[in-house]
Amino acid sequence: MDEVSAELEVIKANWRSVIEGDGGKCPCCNRWGKIYKRGINETMARSLIWLVNARANAHGWVDVPETAPRWLVRSNQLPTLRWWDLVERIPSTDPDFKHSGLWRATALGRAFYNGTAVLPQFV
Image 1 (cartoon, rainbow, N blue to C red):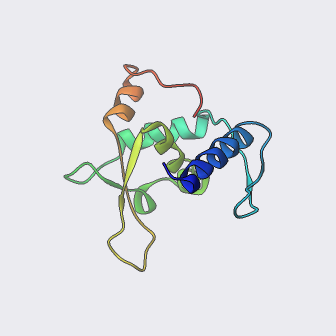
Image 2: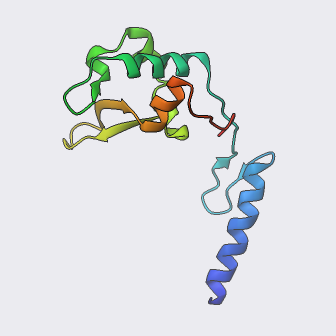
């Protein structure tokens, strides 16, 4: 490992301890950073329940913007479930759109819905 790589590893380790603690400004970009624990809330759970029970296309994907109830779309909690690997989204193939809007529950998401999987309390 060269001298620059070794120094970069030290900076990364120090930065990790800062953001896992009280947080602080990044020594490279001066932006604030902090890691926050996040648990599954009621709206996330309701979003997963809706997705598992939604009418999907032949490949198991659900067009959430077109078919989901308003409370789900407005809450924007469905994407957060990716942190636990409970849901997945197809990337957009159209450069004019950031996301495709097609979602499905993962195998872990369906197992969690069925009560056969255990998840960490926080991510």
